[in-house]
Length: 603
Ligand SMILES: Nc1nc2c(ncn2[C@@H]2O[C@H](COP(=O)(O)OP(=O)(O)OP(=O)(O)O)[C@@H](O)[C@H]2O)c(=O)[nH]1
Ligand SMILES: [Mg+2]
Image (cartoon, rainbow, N blue to C red; front, side, top):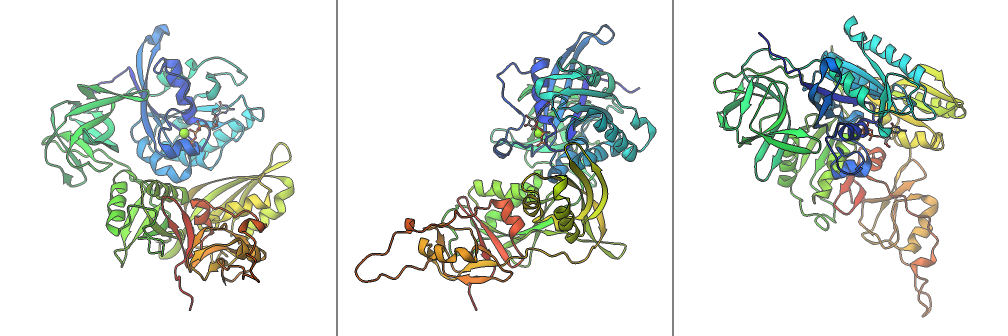
């Protein structure tokens, strides 16, 4: 007979980027009484880059305790929550963690409506047959379009549901940031109770199918005291501290090992517990080697891998190489191919959507990910750790399907003031975009849906912002592979390349200004072959940014400050990734991001 843990609910919060997932978790903490502490915003976005950029990068587990006092169900409940990232580059995080839960809360921003990320995460959740709750969020926004959003959500479910039972879902309305959720779309105040109650009513309690232990490992952690830590969901059985276990995956079976600690998640803390059973999401220590994500923890002698749905394959690749620029070793501490290899191997253990392949030279690795931001965050993290490396222009990963060359495609939704329609449509046309839908929205804005080859979006954003004078909004998400669409023009402008190694002078920059857009400032150090600007024409141009003014008579030349040079264009890593061509590299160190030609010396 199968057992049920009627006081537990496991739920993932999913949405398009920025639709308010992490913010609503703050309120769930607060109003369930789990976190009494201060008013820290987006408490779950705990890592440095998440805080800096205001986005969630890693999916994370937490839990709350909730007392429901409705007579029929009055009891104490524990709701385990997975906060997932919305940015499509981190889709692997969503796929990985959805496998832990029985249900999901789909948030949709009432003003932005259904966007490509909404489709992506909903599709993944429905494929796993998880139970839905829909929350139209941010209804406090003045530009909220609740009716239209709800209609679009229904259309999306109709499109993605695998059977009719999936079409029957509760819809709530709320403003996560203001701390209220309601069954009424006209609500302007209230609390989170309707959300908690809906979770308890609609999300199935965990059920045990067998008493033999099966815990699916969905993420890894490490502590200096405890070593490797496996985090995951127990689907069957019970596990206790000091118990002997094994972990297995496919044909692999580990040697027995002893569990030293078990923790569960509550608010921002982990609590040590003595045992855990089916339905619980826990962290377990005692491993000498970390089990791979997707492994199942079982009793000794009873290896039984739990089904693990593989994560989508990467769509973008870049080469990561040892920094061989003339400035190598000036700013970083981790320089060698060994350093880079070890670091990438460590990353592979927990970054499930990443792949690393050796190349013909030990100095270089082919790193594959789900998009520019996915790889960009890894590079940014590495430079903060002290690494120096060189990375190549990102390239999409082609696939041969039924003998035909295919390429990754993105669903793109742009939202622009009508007046820019011409410029944007022309730009999309050049990029081989296929228009799928166009609707006229409020405030004389247009919403156009396209399917576009992913490679055509490299470098798209800056052009789009120029075309729409910064007023356009663009969102995209991977939708699958389609036959190759033919040539697409890349960067039209050439590079201004330094022919000297030395210190940049204001005098030289002053005379180079008319040639294009400069990336360097007076007194920057440059080397021969380094790119110091974008040429206004389509060819590369060798220039000397270090030229000094000739001293005339006995009088010293004017100082650098005397020259009026427009401020240099400083590009961050992701902008550089959009800008560069295949014969160029980005040199990344803890202090600097430089662009260079692969071949530094002039002929
Ligand atoms: N008006 C309004 N803004 C909100 C509400 N909830 C969240 N926001 C704002 O929306 C932005 C994004 O919020 P987050 O909670 O980080 O969104 P998210 O879905 O976790 O974002 P990712 O994890 O990066 O996908 C923040 O600026 C929030 O302050 C709301 O109820 N009303
Ligand atoms: Mg978030």
